[in-house]
Length: 188
Image 1 (spheres, rainbow, N blue to C red):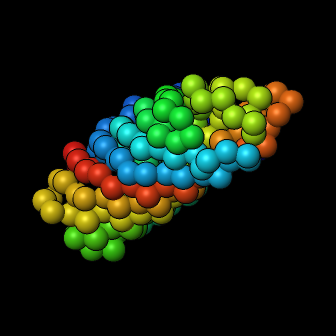
Image 2 (image 1 turned 45 degrees about the vertical axis):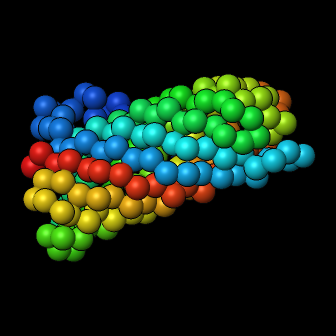
């Protein structure tokens, strides 16, 4: 977990200190859906997420270190506010920093995968976590289904692990499965 945190932080610093080409905004995504995780001695942890993602061109950064791809490589800065509906009404707020690779399959369908790390504050207190401030390593797969040249329906499955990275004594972790759908707008 700490190694993943260091890798993501290093990638963020590289992107922030690189050429201006890395900052070309390629799109915006808005995703929502449902997620569920098991808790000890309580009802399942369930919520309705709302993600707003700014997608930046990361291909120049990866080319600087010798990684070349046919598809799009993007760096995503994603803010979120999740409504928790079980075991009690609560909220999660935070941000994610993700890397996304989009396969250029056709003009209509473009599968992708993404992964990265986030941070959040959760108002829910749980037996699993000793802190309400936590980290979110996560990975997802999805598909853009284009209905216009610059807009697509996006469908995604995402797995996330909520953990305080052993900064507190209790760190049982909460693993959630997320089903997401939304609209993506593309500028290039």
